[in-house]
Length: 275
Image (cartoon, rainbow, N blue to C red):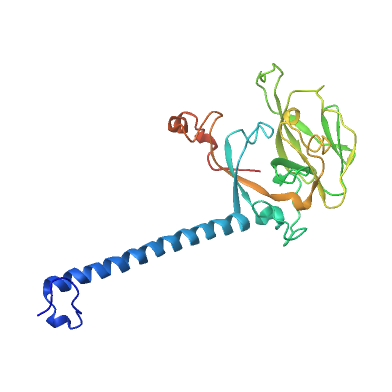
């Protein structure tokens, strides 16, 4: 007769007491099941993170707009998606910009008028977003608050008929500019006589681009030399093209304040495709 202490070698299932057989079987199954479930959870998390990393590097990357420099097209608090494949890939396509290679892989030339996210040339760390105005070989200049490309003024038409001022009491003017090639963009400024309304001629060298904010008098961009502003942007620094506004909050929304998720939301900007 076997002992009830649990030390019996239950090899013959048919002759094992039912209470012992059930109890022992459940223990062994529970231990194995728990271990397998834990391993499956770890594997699921690992592959989910791997997929997210690959998507972020190869396909899309989200960004939040931190300032008003791209108004009236992008507002502070807009949450946008950038396509990474649009211009090919550089070391800046990878988080933390590891120096594993130079230049671009599968490079494609950006188009004039694209809204571009890039690394600030003076530190190669800070993400900036501006509109591409000057291509390699172009000559860019502001004269009397009018953009000139290769010696020709860019035609603009004022579209804002509202008597609106900014926080400093300066009038806000909106106009449609028609860039060479026919792309029409909406810009905003405070009228003539501001700091960046008259500039020297900027000659864009090979492998570089000239960027400007759509909010012309409230943007530090390629009109300001690299030590103080953006300067000319190397092709390697391009991250991707801004494609769509997923959703948007007005300034003051906070992740830690759920009430602000609803009180600060701007639903009219959701899923806006960017030109």
